[in-house]
Picture 1 (tube, one colour):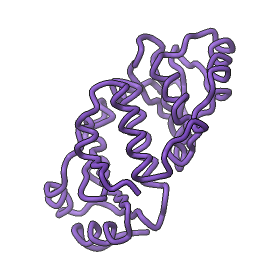
Picture 2 (cartoon, rainbow, N blue to C red; picture 1 turned 180 degrees about the vertical axis):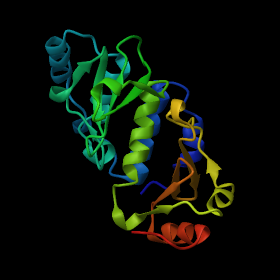
Picture 3 (cartoon, rainbow, N blue to C red; picture 1 turned 45 degrees about the horizontal axis):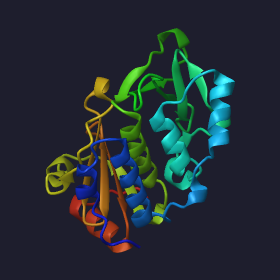
Length: 231
């Protein structure tokens, strides 16, 4: 376990896609098994995607898949990062991630090195569906993905419940992580906070999930917020 990795400080240093990849490498080393050279897809697999779809993958997409695309424990504990052979283009966006119950999909623009990411809900009336803004860059969406999937990586180190009236005040004692509130078109959205060895995601001011590195840290965090936990 890496004790020197401070999620709060390290995320504040993320200014570009290279910083995002450094953060994910450090986070994996501290909160999961470290990344290895075997954890990414090779150039042949990614070039095959470009040939099959007739596109050029944005640099950030290629870099992410090359670095950690095979690490399902970082990317697919609940929602699913698609394998290269599963990638497809819809309405001009490259679809790369599916919600676990098929309720939504994520797509990235194909222009620029690190383009914006959008989410599209899966509705009974397909004509009512539209792509909605998620985050401004693919690399930042990868940081969000790894953090979100960590909430579901180990049930013994996570808990969740509905927000009560005191929780928002308790959150003020945690550090707000420098991720924008998202999805930007549906505020209030999701916000991230952190304490010592603890991550907290608060969704739509209605739901709260805690993930800790140790059982002691989880117990302490749950006590901060009071009872009613569901796990």
